[in-house]
Length: 356
Ligand SMILES: *Cc1c(COP(=O)(O)O)cnc(C)c1O
Image (cartoon, rainbow, N blue to C red; front, side):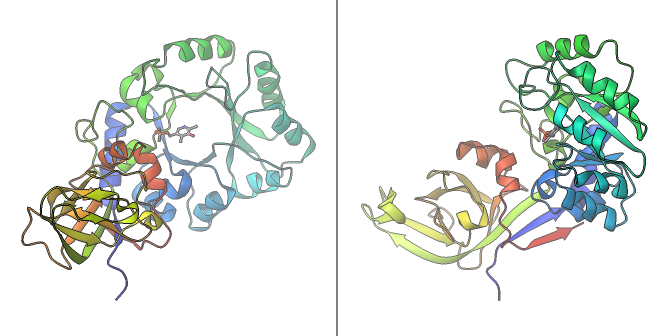
């Protein structure tokens, strides 16, 4: 038998979370963001479960081409566009929509023939200062794409730095509107946080990622409150039991000391499976559906959990590290990170099982 760890991916939850997107942004078309192997959920299966989306957004040519070879006909948006002149041939061959975000890409497009017409996105830097044209050169980018014989349509796009935080979107939205005011064309602005909190950002295309996977983009509002269902559940089992007397310690660095007699379950899940090593003692975990906490340091392949109050727990008892019944958001918060990182960080060695 293999190690008892698996990640189940609930296809119906993906579809239902897309339904929440549709309710919230009913007038916009939807790019389902499936970058990073669909946030760790498995690209091809996730795309299938999200087939009601209007298109798929990602970064890698390899992933985009994989979807095309699976028969996906919907638009595919490449969020970082293309990188090298030789990528241009792939844009035409696979009908991919690149985000064009700098002058260097414009130069490549002007020098490299495009065999067939494609759509393009023009990314405007409205303040995040990561990708995008600034007020100084946005006109150059816009004109170049408008005048390119093989570019069918140009959509204006920006990305928010703090739609989930105290700054919100107002400043960036205003700057984006003023920079793009003379330009006619569809617009795409909202990630999950903007989609949920700022309807004024919905525009023509929204770009939800994390909410499709049933997690919340907000520290102060849970996925459940937002009507989202977890998609990935990381499940494993107890593989050994230990009894600790008061004063005995456990794990690397003797990172936890029992204050009284305790029963510990040793669980087959460690940082090599993608569980965060930063999770401290007391990070929530479900043993047979009951909430308890981790004890001691996370090791590569194992973690210890307190089962003192769960006398029926034994070798083979199921353990949920995150997912159904225990939000990845909550585990991530305990470990000082975000659900995004937990989901994307699911290790390749963990078998992924799709469930309806
Ligand atoms: C990742 C990404 C998104 C989706 O963000 P979420 O916070 O997961 O909804 C949207 N737009 C761009 C440009 C992205 O890179």
